[in-house]
Length: 335
Image (cartoon, rainbow, N blue to C red; front, side, top):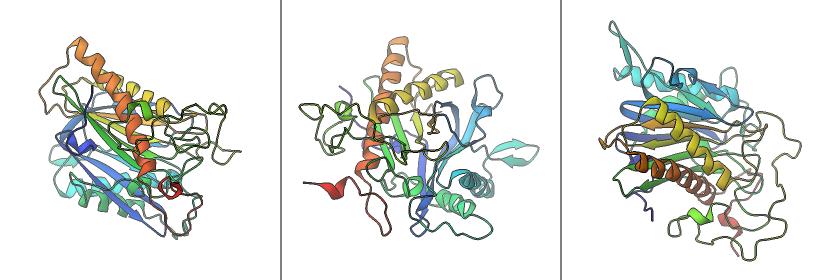
């Protein structure tokens, strides 16, 4: 039986802090994971419409071994500017890959589409994401808000508001896993027209309502509920980070990112569509000092999917209403 870490957040993984910055009028924002020391990292993209920055360097065959931060942002392609703000904040602190006295912060980023969520996107010549990225670093801490916050501030699903979710798992080996996710899929995190989460079998306690799966399962459970039924590529996306304090190679981090995508498939129906840019970054801080044995690696990769599924549900569960919303929150429909 898995159990959560003390905060049930990705920051239960030693060596990580998370910061949010968002704009209520814009209905969008940025979330950054800051690594206290460079972390081994990789990435896996399974959606058909990703928006990314600095992902090629994360492939195991490429040279950079450690990164300084990861950015999840709203704003579609405009949101990639957030990484520049994060770089600026880290460079001021002397953080980055050092080359003859010059510091280059290594900051991969991914974005989601939240331009049609009722927010005011008339920002003038330049979008605000660079400044939001800088502010997110300044706010980075062990505790941070879930739901309508950061990169999840303007997120939606086919049925409810989406949001920023996180969860953690403490394994019997002593390894800790954490997931962070901005939930903005074309599909739904709940079963048919019910409030029951697809990820219910993985719930620990009542972390996202404790409703379990519907019984009996609705006959229409396999029916598709899609946001913007005539969805266009790039108009959705669930972007996430899976992190551990285990000691991993870049190749093992790649496998961790792949395994975490199982959580997308467990928590969202449908997932990985041509209209989503579904992506998972993987981070390994190595702080536990534990190199997983083959058996421990199986537990680690299995728990990655379960932890991600829980984080996705928690993001929807924690969303809060705001003026101008186009869809309701999960919590507002209790009854």
